[in-house]
Length: 237
Length: 145
Image 1 (cartoon, rainbow over the protein chains, first blue to last red):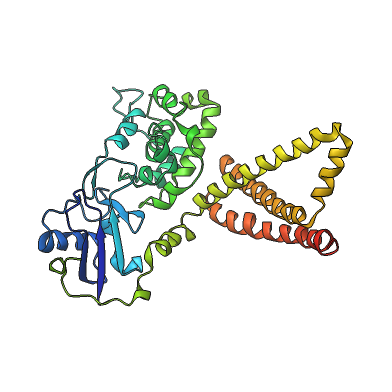
Image 2 (cartoon, rainbow over the protein chains, first blue to last red; image 1 turned 60 degrees about the horizontal axis):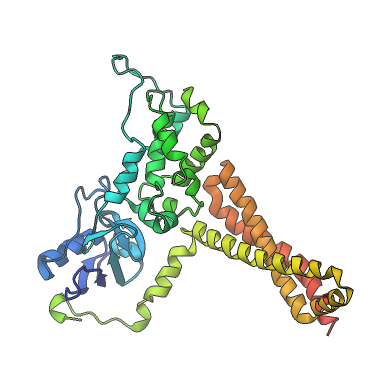
């Protein structure tokens, strides 16, 4: 612990805007703290996005030293570097400075019908999901997605093919397809079994490396690839 | 740099700044090993396609015994023997990483894919390569020259 001096290089939308800042920070401070100091004390025109500050909303995802991370969860000392480069997420259109438009990410998210479409809308009974069922086991470790877009931005396939669904949407589709309460199998199978669905994944594992919630997204994609070989089985749940 | 945008002035020795290349290399060191494996698989695959084209072309020359003999003589030279050792490395990397990828597709040991790349594709691959490359080097290059 203690104070240390860090050099920040920020991506800015306007070419005239200042990109370099030098700050003395406590090693426990986060990159988000540094961005607030820059905005409040040095350059009020700096734009970035944040909300919860505790790593549960995914709003402050950005590329910090070339890796997508949550600014609120990245302490400066853990970067092991005195020079810190901050850029907006890749593969997404930049709105301003460090703010990206997550539109393309959520367009794919919508394609898999992420909401629960209950089999029986009028049922008043509570669903029982045994923890040792396939859905119980998968949901336990894969329902924590905060839709930060880190996996989408780091994926080599979304970088070269804008139509690819991306890891987060496929993970959500998998959870819905395994969910015994859900009845909308067809739309999701059609989205996943499409040429821009699961078959585009080349198992680069970048999404797994980047996910701030440590979700094994490639595992979800591989599960869905195998499921797409026998899609009729998904209807019998 | 505009000093008005600085809080306390900093004085860094050059060695303290790892630079973009070193930082990018760190990114791939362990966490992004799947990406490294992906590119190795693609590059070795393209190299093997190039080899196969050359191989089929040589077999095609079987129709002309003189040309075929000349080609075999050329392939016996130390330079081509060295390229053969390179081919062995390419085949081993592509095959072992291919086994790892097949396991990933089948969901076997998927959570340990990093270990399978380093210990199986690279580690066991290096042992296999040395077992093949050392005799190839001794009998194909040293004794030839």
